[in-house]
Image (cartoon, rainbow, N blue to C red):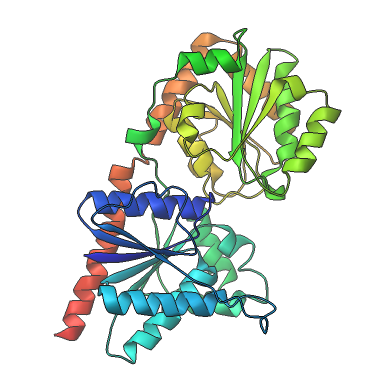
Amino acid sequence: MKIGMICYPTYGGSGVMATELGKALAHKGYEVHFISTSLPVRLDTIGSNIFFHEVNVLNYPLFEYTPYESALISKIVDVVRYEKLDILHVHYAIPHAFAAVIAKQILASQDINIPVVTTLHGTDITLVGRDATYEPTVTFSINQSDAVTAVSQFLKDETFKYFKVKKDICVIPNFVDFERFNKKPKNHFKVAIAPNGEKIIVHTSNFREVKRLDDVLHVFEGINKVIPSKLLLMGDGPDRSRLELLTRKMDLVQDVRFLGKIEAVEEVLSIADLFLLPSERESFGLAALEAMACQVPVISSDAEGIPEVNIDGVTGYISKIGNVKEMAANALKILSDPAIHQQFKLAAFERAKEFDLKNIIVKYEDVYKKLLAKKAIMVS
């Protein structure tokens, strides 16, 4: 089977999941063709059955904004025709699903029938797609897709709530590759970060407002006042500069490290004692899942799909969005007692196993096979 995988190339959850899924499918023998504006950050290998096709956007003085959608549609048509793809799997509704269904219509005029699978990831539905400017396009794209999946039950419910969807939506959660994330901590790294045995608290995100990074600092401050700790911040984004200034204002500079974008996040998570995710919006909570796979308990908000991953009082604690005092108190409950900490660590690990890549990939394979079987019946 030849699969076209269309995604953003960045560190965002949709791009990460698309890349990891494509790599896993290739490992199982499928031929996977990535179509994106640049090489996805997690695509660390191009093998005999993994291919990359770059979308080249025309930079012409006439255009105030580069016509990305048109370039993407043309690239999809080109790759499907000449690589003879069997199926397209697009991640994120805007503009990938729209581009794919338009490409599908163009190809149909050339007697080429290619099924389109659209995976909804979060803000493409809960934020951007809900804007009146984009709603008709998102609705059209979903309804014209041959199969639609969502990464959480919350996201599925939101899609039906805000869009006139006529398609069934299959919930296939995000996943974690245990071969990558079940790492033993590197003690020399831990000693370098926390030379006096301080607790290591971690947060990773794209540093946007919805991640509530101020809350991360305030929760950490509450922990650090009682238990000496270090905060490691992985990622980058528009809120980073402001957060660096706030760190100075709160006199936390000595205990907070901005690590920037790190591909091997598992190396940092493996030495962590606790993970913070106080987000305002989080359709699934992939960052929390990856932490849990490294036996790291999670302190989180109750935003959107997070409770489908982090189990309150079992794998960590959940609080109302913005309740930093309770989050800090819950963190101290876990960190203050080694036996309790160990209990939460093991529970987090066991919960993460339910999202093992090996279990999730077969769900996508099932979607592909059903569509291709339906296509075969139509042809015959």
